[in-house]
Length: 474
Image (cartoon, rainbow, N blue to C red; front, top):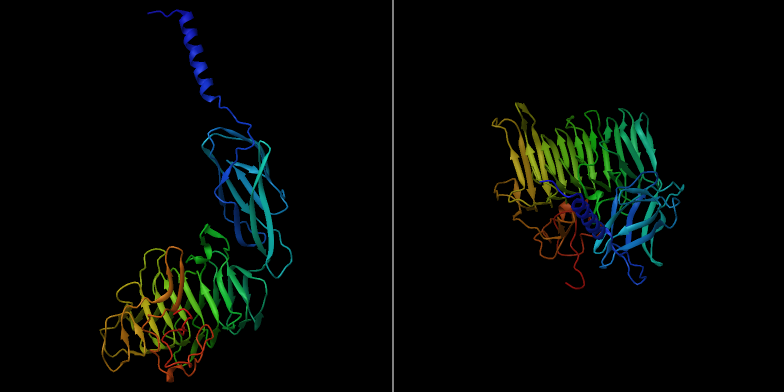
């Protein structure tokens, strides 16, 4: 049937009128109508100068029924502050006539790159995003601290060297200590490792941290992954510290090693010579093994070794002594594949005699029901010697002459165990069975705990690296 042309034109007119009517929002000019924001202040923490941050998000809401035109969205300090914004997909520092319909919202994305200021200490930077709507001015404040740093790229230490810096040192492409060379790292030095870089020691390493100025080994991301979660809480961000076969007589005192693929790895060496002395040190939140030692001689005292995707401590053969150490595996970033303590004297068909693995005044704890894994060769002639005394251990009870005064119990009584926020504090709370469990004789070389508190002021020292101190409200 043939349509009347007049009828077709009438239908088109009605359709167009309907479309225009649907899209002809009434933009209010009422100055009392205001915007709302997901945050009134955005803090980007400490930013290494010259390096861009991850992107933060701000949501702008029009909670009114009426549509609005935002006359301008502006960075108050322009490009001088180092902050950058992106408004609904457009980059810049000044935006005009942004429409936001009634009961709708838009996104603003914020980044920052702070210019160097030749300062040893962090310096404050601020800016604000200013919104002008119908003559009404609103703003969201932006805060950050900039931190200047030094950098080392594929650096090889070929002679005795001291590293000391008030600024962080960012390591690119690893730092290597060659055989016959000694690297000394002064108290308070902070080494930030980029990507998969690591510290490779073929010679000798001495870390001279103190209680008030520990040496830090960590990744170089200083911003947040989420608003509540700093990258500094994540494992697997850099390599770790590896002592190769030729490396002996290494000393680490008051160090904080965290966020790596592994913490410390000691390769096989002669067990009649000390490979590593580890005191007053934290190894925390690694994706692999925390402290991995193969067929070498080492001692550790007053150390916290915690939260490893594999094992907090893995020993394959060798001769070891641990005193006043807290070994705690509550790794929760993803699936935990190991335990707090794993001991072996054979790998494949290769024997690794375990001359001794002694644990005195220690805590071995974790989220599973058994936090010790012992793998012993079927060949009984291969030594598999261990000793536990005055310890609190989450494992299956064992009774023999190698066990003395051990409490076999799953005891999670620590100060803070927040897996959601990835915040852990392995100091004891008042219900811990580790309180007064230790032996005074084994504490003689460690009269102070990892916080510098005396172990000699009450009935007996506590097991682990932290001494419980009663609070006023307890």
